[in-house]
Image (tube, rainbow, N blue to C red):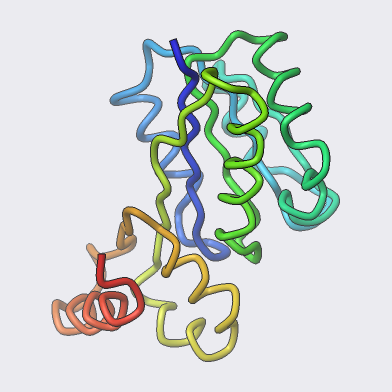
Length: 178
């Protein structure tokens, strides 16, 4: 049986960890899960929150996961598979990382660990309130996360006007028509 890899990206504060916790509590609670979390900075607060959910968490606090593990990613995945025997590996890259680089690292690992991995979900979480601020100011990273996602989840819609949600959705469709 193949280990599923889910990549859940999104810019800083978009709600990635909240989504992961919700998925684990409501849908994935019977699976053995390892989370690779990439915090930007020195303190992995989200990692501590996830540890309380009885999930194995591997934190990387020294830069972007795609830069830190680019050469050894398949080795790290193999070690995780051997040590924990997970059903699923959830990768939560830094909010300022390029999703395309994380996907490339996973594809490389998948090719080297034949028949053991499958890239399952590639999700980007977008905060509808910060979308128009982040798009021009962090264009390279932000657009990359949107363009390479297979699924885009709009967060914080409960407090947004329908017009804002529609504008954000239409703008996202122009970047990622699929």
